[in-house]
Length: 283
Image (cartoon, rainbow, N blue to C red; front, top):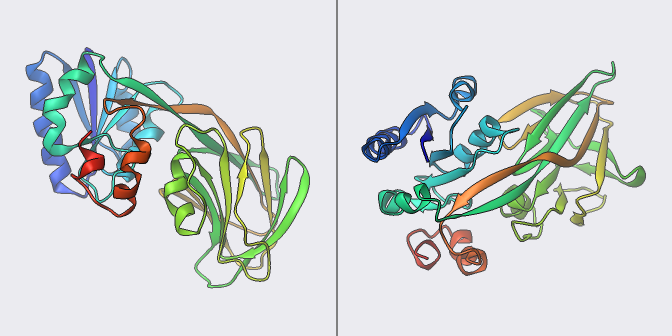
């Protein structure tokens, strides 16, 4: 590898400090390095060309922002955990300098993850498109009132949700908000995705696992403003009669990993309990 980028969480000073240490370490190996806040997408995108690897210093939220920097390209990401959980991160900060040389020497493997695409079309016919690695959430806004969303899959009516919200989650996102809403966990390399209602009232309460070919359409029917959240950091208001179409994205995210390929199940319980530095983090 000749060029590596480092993205850090700008509101956590420890991540900025760790990014500086990693920068010095990598430069001592003869590698060109750039460092940027993960929240400054435009600046980071301007430095991405020719980058062989993006390191993130923080938690899963920092990785989700890094994803918006690297797509639609194929630059892989390796996460260094300074957050609370780190489902998507690969290394703890105290082992990063020990194991980075193996990644630099291309001894790792590529973990490819599917994404979701959401297209929002307003009543005037104008549309906006976003891509998510974790989840897309359509939910109530500031007023604590249920939203109504008519749901169809591949053009076939499914149900009308009366609920606080609806989550569409990838396999990667199945251990996040969807899990808290009682959705199942999907093996992370799966291309299937989830449809999970949030606190439904007298409407369908069961989660669904949808195949990668499915196209989910939600038509809002609500008097109060709703919201759309993409990976928790792209947020916009929704109004009555807007249509939301969710399907598998044409983009994928590539993670460069060094841990064993089959370590997902062995580390799952520890990660769900918020344990770090234990059996699931040592392999």
